[in-house]
Length: 309
Image 1 (cartoon, rainbow, N blue to C red):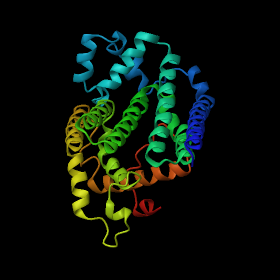
Image 2: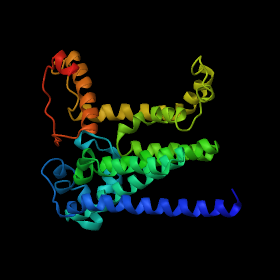
Image 3: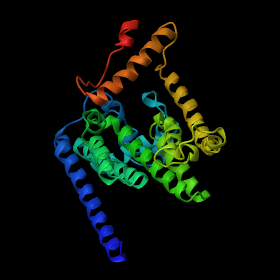
């Protein structure tokens, strides 16, 4: 291929990517345009905004201290509080503005997800399909349309930013880039502690599509060697330490508000079976998003047949 043809192909790819960005944004706006007309709901929105004097004080020194020290709503997510304080400074108690912030975050997350997958795999249209499914999947409606779920759309932004900075680090493994990975991950944990699983996801990305396991790439019949995986695990240790600290703080916050029930209330066998059922239901609703709800009551003791089902 001549230099001229390579240049033309590069320009064509750039136009293709821009078109995908536009189509993904339009798809989200078509689905979520109506959300701007929604109001607050009396389910967590009251605790997060409409009955929260700290949020309604806006961004301030005292608000910053409160955000980093409170376990209000049995959570410790200071950046979520600061985000809502910023919205209050802009919109006061006009719910439309809060909804638009969530929509903008969802657009940014979708475009960034496409960019990261396309950069990792080089598969433009497959990456676009993944991003499109994420953009319009019904299971994400709760996170985008519910103001109190700001923590979901904002933490997703830092999740994808952590993936992006990690890809850049793998391309050029220098300390400065690894510090960016740690910064993005830390910011995400300050929004929502569910990001504690992200270091394990990065390890999966090492296998594919980043191809950091030589034996797997070469089709070694003996499988992946410990000598290959151990450096990659050590590489994640700083992230795992951050995840551990976040987990400790999260448990403390949940206990302080009574969110963690005793074993007398929910015995261990009930917790284990509920974990299996919940995980299976997540997978089921991802494939077939039917009967979605804002709240799923705990069924109490779950039979073995329910778990198998």
